[in-house]
Length: 92
Image (cartoon, rainbow, N blue to C red; front, side, top):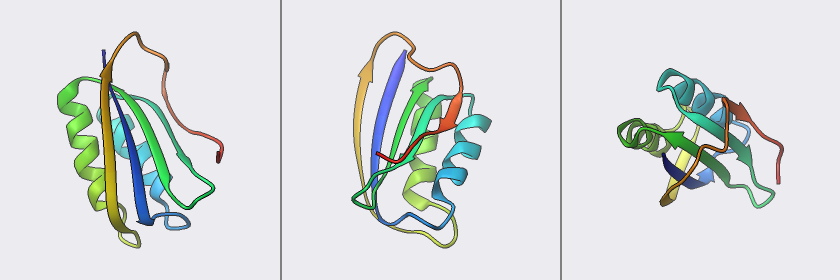
């Protein structure tokens, strides 16, 4: 299974970013988690079809209307599924 981790920086907390990613990932049939980081970034861990992950990455680069995305760092990997659904995780 394909997996991607996105670290999104900019004005991305307090603007509905996690909810936005949750909706997009669920619509794409992905599993994983989105969470705030204490340094102000948002982290997305997602797994599923590569094409769906790439579409989620496009969504993350745009963000919801109030967000200002400055940078998205991406790392790709493959492996066994670690998630059953897509959820909003705890800040960490």
